[in-house]
Length: 57
Image (cartoon, rainbow, N blue to C red; front, side):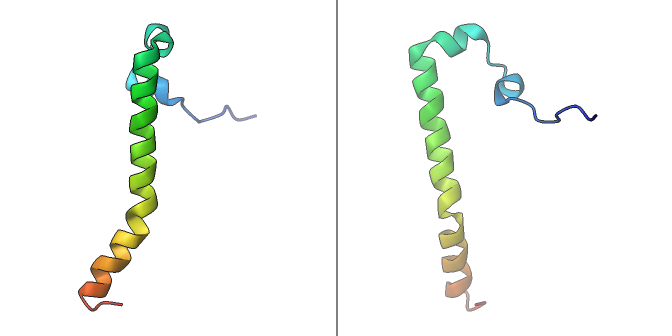
């Protein structure tokens, strides 16, 4: 059997148990993740608008 290749984001960003327990740090991380998700959701609209204005669609 193959080991699961997924890595938790905390391992990548150096999150420790102390930073997870800090309420202020947790809220800041959640707001950053929300902002990033919102930006990713807007990427198709931004792309279509850019190429539409350039006449490539």
